[in-house]
Image (tube, rainbow, N blue to C red; front, side, top):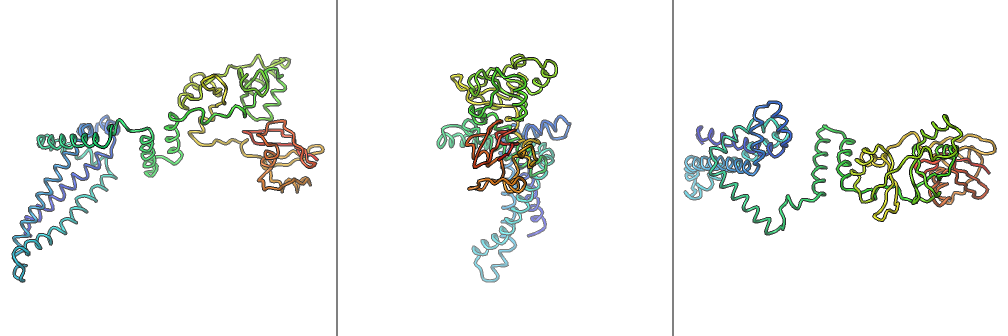
Amino acid sequence: MVGLEWIIVLLMVLINALFAAYEIALASVTKTRLESLKNQGRFGATAAIVMKERIEKSFAVVQLGITIVGLIAGATSGATASENLSPILQRYGWSERTADGLSIAIFVAPLTILTIVVGELVPKLFALRNKEWVCLSLSPWMRGFSILAWPLVWVLEASATGLMNFTERLWSPKSTHESKTEAIELQELRAIASLARTSSLIGSREENIILGAARLASRTLQEIALPAEQIHALPLESTLGECLIAAHMDMHTRFPVAKIKSDPQTIIGYVTFKDIVSVMRINPKEPSIAGILRSIPKLDQSLTISAALERLLREHTHIAMVSDSRGVITGMITLEDIVEELLGDIQDEYDMLPIHAVRSGQGWVAGGGISLTRLEELTGIEFDRAEMFPNLNAWVSDRLGHLPVGGDTLEHQGVRIVVRKVRRQRVLEALVTR
């Protein structure tokens, strides 16, 4: 192949590389990012936005360019192969027809490899890593080419769009955009968040927050609410002293208040630990908690978590009751529950079960996290362990047969245990005697 033909073929391969790189770059960069670059005054951003808004037309431009340069490269290499290599093969006894075919194959094979590697793979990988620069640099040129070749571009775009619409009507009753479900959109968001994490733009925790925030709009309060039977409410007739003891044992900061003890359907409000302490300091003779009772909102269990979050923030409250369509209380939700849907389980210093064991009168005050083996060594008290339990909390919860609450008393084979403090339905501290 003479030098001029080589130059033409290589030039066509390089032009093919530009079209291939631009196609990937335009598809990868977002319109929002392009608008941001336009506001920054970046050259080429305006043209890039125009091409992005008409993505079908832009793909037609790219495909037209790739087809034209491919035809030119193929015709040039084929003609040159027939003129230069075919006579040489004929001298070795090959027929003219066979020699022409072999000469074209000999030139086309390496040209195909060159086109795939240099004209497709390398530019596309480069465009993925430098999509903004490639898109901004080539958009003005691609827009100019689309204007010059607008009749062909229009034919290609109209043909592709028409065929696509016909295919969708034939195999799918609805357009892809119309039938796109929330699950698919969530998968796309998950893919974008994963890409941002692998690119070190965000961390794994930020990725989980993004996905958790997206799920808030599709999940309901019924899925995360504390069941009604697990709500520990203070009786309305409780004195401030009794409330202070309950707060000390349950380790919460807000407590629902019910007219009837252990009946969540009669909950009329809530009190805070801070209010209890403040009133006891200012007016220790206050007979009941009625004076510090706060109203508690009631949310429908079908309400989305995101809507519930807006409601709690708007009403400046951290707690709400959850009810069904008939108004029956089915559970309770707190602001912390919603935050945990975003960040995962939030543990404070009280969520780590303590492992202490301190002598107290005739018994021992033990933390819920202490192992039974260690507790036996310190106290000399033997526990019935037909099954393996990791700590005192697990043993007590199993023997009680229900979720522990402050004040629960358990007597088992000569061992008496009084639950002193509870946190999130777990025994935080208990008094062990025999």
